[in-house]
Length: 189
Picture 1 (cartoon, rainbow, N blue to C red):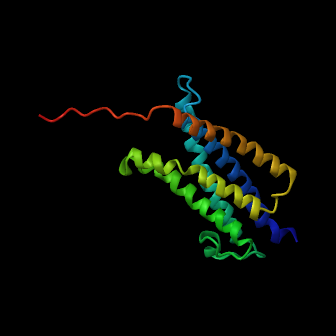
Picture 2 (cartoon, one colour):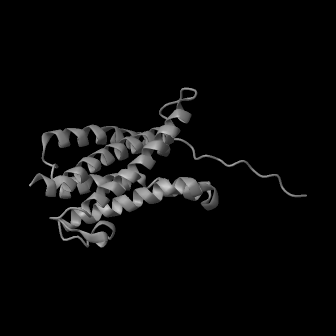
Picture 3 (spheres, helix red, strand yellow):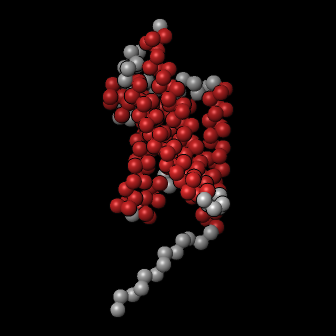
């Protein structure tokens, strides 16, 4: 009995670690964007951690879905783990989770093409990262089999509180501080 559930359990475990890393990565990104931490050298360390956490998280999201391919009960198929709302199992929740997974992949990969797409466009795109976190959170709450367990509720609360604080700080300080000004270019003679 436990052998046919092995991939289900493994997927749940990997998904739990993925949502933890996503929450931490989003909180750290918001801390950097809001300039909450101003100690010398800290921003560089936070940036390295943020990048590493995001990369590992994307791999865990892929493993979370990929492990389900071997689940003999669910049998989602490739479309079921990659195309939103195709899997009949808790369709809304799984669909939102798949969208969150794709968004996290796009946001993480965008860092490596920011010079091509431009810093301003990259920053605007990256500002949508909290949307991926909210979608992933809803995925856990609607489709997650552990959503009602006290430990999961406590973990999600512990993850969401710093994200909510950093997001609120970022929004409030963004509204009260003047916009960044780009230096004027010297006029060509």
